[in-house]
Image (cartoon, rainbow, N blue to C red; front, side, top):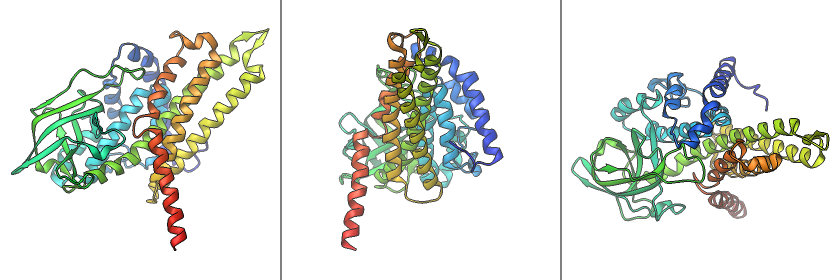
Length: 386
């Protein structure tokens, strides 16, 4: 897709990211996955290149770049090593909550560390009994003077046990949604523990696990936004997070397409490359079309966000379409490879396993359909009553 609206500086930035991703991240992706090794040093390297805080203001050490540029960076990184891109996306999700809702003193203390990549952020919304029904969370924060005392367990936390701070949604009141608040909890707070991480089908290099709070005391000054505003903060953060996942999914799908095209061009059957057979050629054409369409959709949503326009529905559309496309493209890439594609000797089986979870996290794709359809039906209702 054309990048005619990018400045020369932004093009140079993306060229740098592409070089770093190909030279430093791609060669280690398979081994990191095989060894369940979290590439924290890769995140630190992105920080050293001023890439850990791209969409945030320069007053706190950020890059001051449009969200659309940041998403292009995620896509480039995901094309090489999707776990690194996912980590940057989650880190940005947590950083956004701090940048948008922290008090001045807390922001001055924490944001420069996050945007520099010195600190790694994590986002804690889901619980064992509240996944898609996020407002049903039960982790409580009881106020005692100028501190909150936290008790409860968060689940499915990316960076669990690795992050330096956690953006945590907690119950401070009885109302299902308006009784939720958001706290920034440093990882070294007494009373936090981390059970063994989850064992997953794919993305083993990305740590996912529970965060347990047992009488953990957090200053009231670490609250993000007002008390009772947490659920609204959570939903707003997810709009950006879903765009991040969409960009990661496009990068992963592009990687699978690249491998499939290369293999189809050199694998010989019946005296010619298999890419010359219409069955394979048309499969590749459909894969490429899906990738381009997903890319266009996430960039359109990002353009709306950067213009200050409503973009929540488009974020859900981008997440839904891009992750479904990644699943389809990676599955087809395995098919192009035939029996070899099903072995760990080739990368496409890993890409297929990595793609699957993208249809689940940051709101399942069924939830995205709920969000999109409600928006459509709400618009219809408003139109008929106008």
